Length: 350
Ligand code: ADP
Ligand code: MG
Image (cartoon, rainbow, N blue to C red; front, side, top):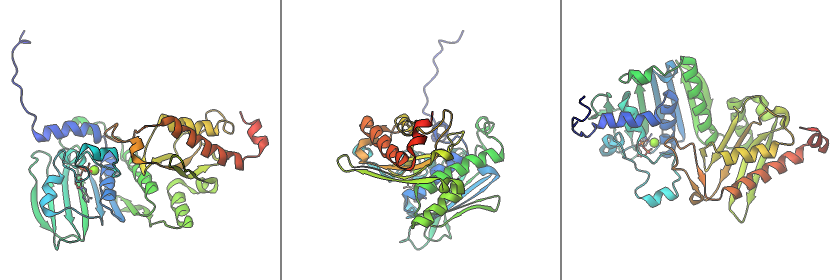
């Protein structure tokens, strides 16, 4: 046996290191879209347009009108652990940006053909960097572009066949991708979003500032029945600084799946046991077993009271005072549900 033979230790090449990291954040086209949309929002974009082909596998092209990236920073934007969003560990304590790990562009560019074109408003011309997966040394070239950025991701997983095998049909990949757009469009009513697939426009969402415009966006994203059965939630607890607002649906609009449940903490969508439990408990007297409420809810709290650095995809959070958060959510929702529900229904429901 040669099991005792010494194998020299080598430093992974940047590309290989990035591809390994990509395993955590880039599962499918939808994960790329999530990262790119978050970057645009972090860059202050007010208008984002997304074109995809073949469920995003062949092409994802996102254009924004955000702050852009300075020419000198373009190559750095594609390297690992390069971020403009935090500089010290303390910054993580109160991070408000959606990104902060500085990994997304490095990961995505290691498993695709990526071009990033950008022009900050104060720069007279645009520049672009491209990487082709195999060598991570980006080439810089002048480009034509209005203020803002465009990221083009082609041929996802072209150089990682093992990952490509896990991709599903065009329809399935598009469904995942649409869900990502839906979540972010629900998180930022003030930003306009368009989504086109194979040159067909699926969503064209204008900024929604009035109540009527917000309801219109909700009905485009979640269907007219959602808004017809929606109850408005808006509760604040002065002492703890917690605020919960949004929409929950009447028990009559319950669903057989928990597929229309959107919960945002400081603008970031999350999945959390404490939250789910509080919602379920608020509905327990009015919903039959196996039925699920639909909701779009926003919890705002002091960012130091919640840890978002739990998982690379940042879908998990940890509340410092989870009991307090749980009870606040439960009480807020219970009050709204009780107000609209006749006592007889409350009693007769299982
Ligand atoms: P992170 O978002 O965690 O900082 P990314 O790899 O997603 O890491 O992006 C790296 C950096 O590139 C960001 O910190 C930001 O400075 C810059 N960047 C990426 N996308 C955009 C964009 N659309 N507009 C402006 N800057 C961007
Ligand atoms: Mg990012």
